[in-house]
Length: 315
Ligand code: 0X9
Ligand code: ZN
Image 1: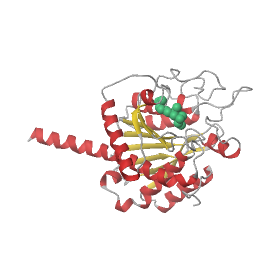
Image 2 (image 1 turned 90 degrees about the vertical axis):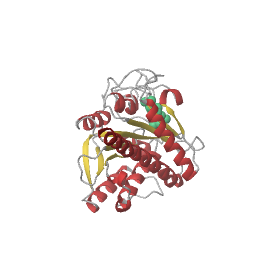
Image 3 (image 1 turned 120 degrees about the vertical axis):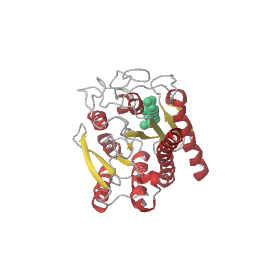
Image 4 (image 1 turned 180 degrees about the horizontal axis):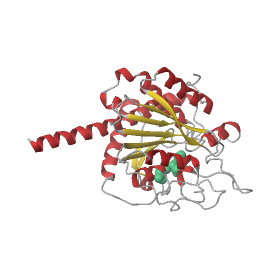
């Protein structure tokens, strides 16, 4: 395959990497096309598993916003780390069914390479008005609320209705088709700012279960800083960034019931912003991997702790 982590690559190289990995490691991985974008590009995911259908599932996506090039780069870096290191990975990483969607907005991603480096939305046409829907305002949980726009020319245009866009619709369809509780984490990679964010994003709303997300988020942030020196700010989306409804993380938690729903905003904090030099891919990739590792561990350890408790209670 032609993918490297020394440069930003086009969609073809990323999908070629997925196909190559599926051919090279057929016992543990495969690709699946979950649908097609507005411009008919495949929405392609890589599945990695030790074959145990009962493993907890973790969904990882990237590239929902076209210009955030570090995101697909980090997501493919993580996929590569998982596969190249598989035999030596700890049990809590191998006993997970991984679903990796590196470029959730393939049309926008290509457009940001060919035409407009700072393109954000998908490529939905609205006749004569400005094209594009903000996919991270198009998910069907509290759709149309704060931080969203009804104006197609806005960068945060929410679309004509919840899941009006194939790119969001097929993610929701794919995840919803599994039995509830299959997925324990939904991790969506964005940039920039170095934030680990959890629901709720639609408003300044606090629920009990946010405490667990906060704890694991902080654990990830602390571990990243200890390993690489990079600092991540941890908190709920609305409080830490701004309220914005229709995000994928809110949908994952609020509708799909996935406990660990996070948006991670990778580096940097603004020096280069979206136009981050490719030399930042590897360091960001390692930080992203640490984040994923921390969440996987929390899922497995949580389960073991519960099992220990159950055992203690029945003895
Ligand atoms: O605004 C967004 O969609 C995300 N930030 S970005 O700069 N990458 O565009 C933050 C989304 C946080 N989650 C929710 N608001 N639900
Ligand atoms: Zn984004």
